Length: 364
Ligand code: SOE
Image (cartoon, rainbow, N blue to C red; front, top):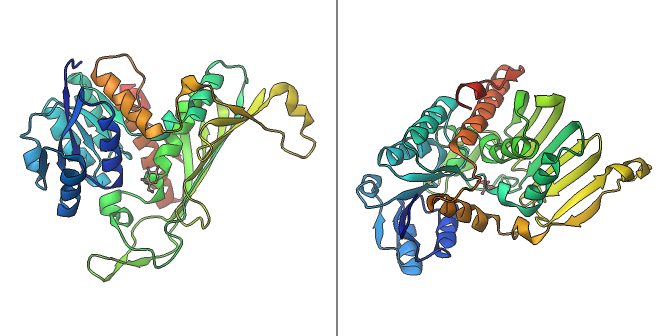
């Protein structure tokens, strides 16, 4: 799409915004992070001091007056939709953080807008770029493991285990949309569909908030937590796949533990992102030798599946797409699909019932 030097802006310069920036630096001078926007002056100061970013602003309106070709939206979830919309209307290519939007209607609108304008559109489903994920996808695409019975996932973190852990925007339903469901579930549901190529058809979800009030470090006041701390989901996927998922930010002892296990007629596999370059596998002929002990063996991922730096590979994919290369990226359509599943989980939590994940047909 773009030949010479691409000028990129980053909106939202928290931890993940900075990580995007660091990775873009590896593609300089063909890609230049021209502008950073964040309401927090200290963060802007950091962008200036440590990365020598030319244009800094706390006013989001100003960024839309700048001469950019692409933008990363790495803000709290609720403002993804208005910012991505403005970016697309400005004719900019977009990499948006997950979860894409606050509901599937918003996601569908952005999807169509990006399509109409033929703009590169990507969602930061960063774990697609883990070597073991790529390897398992390749194995499953070859179809040699026959029918898939189970996709079993957990995504566990512990940063909210302590009741004294501070309040943040991630705990406000108006800013985040949900808790672990959108934050961690977005990755899990994307991986379940990406790995198997099967869609999640219906879900039943159960949520829990363990710590209902936390201290806001900005005001010093206690604030109500309006999102979930933990969510369990089970579901039915295409092909009769039995999906089970557990997610928590109160899983004491866990750092960023995301695993996906797939059990099929002719083999079983486990991806553990804390060991990004190995795939546990039990190929069919070995399956009958379990004898009440699991017999997975570890297979190293070949170098062509990339390094363990999945965020770098994510940026690389976006940059290649900007350069007009044919590269498979998680698109806004994938973000829309994901949003349909998240919406169905939220409805299931609210109503205590199974919910269909409809909406895939309209635009896919
Ligand atoms: C915080 O929970 C967080 O940084 C998420 O927002 C990421 O998407 C996840 O991959 C790691 O944890």
